[in-house]
Length: 145
Ligand code: FE
Image (cartoon, rainbow, N blue to C red; front, side, top):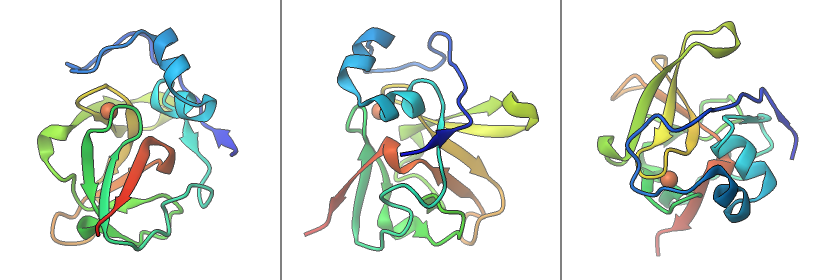
């Protein structure tokens, strides 16, 4: 996988339930997962495994397993990243102002482990008008039987 837009996070900024040192995360995650989830990298568009996934199921955090998004809120944004109108439960994500790379964006983190998931934008479709633009590599999809 090709990665770009790599930023660095120093320390922990949200109240996490799953606490690991960065070295422990390095052991637990793949190299590419570590770059996105812990160092706030972004996977290249149209390269992730879920942007075109239309199956019914739940998307969990790839780092800690917390439930994050349902396929019910997934829509085809055309961006090349899996996109959702809302998280499964608001408290499962943390939103944080992100002024990196000369942009004013809102970062989306897993509330359980503090892993970087992606960003949220206000140009999404109804009912919320929000577009949660996620990295496939930060997610783990489980199909509904
Ligand atoms: Fe997590």
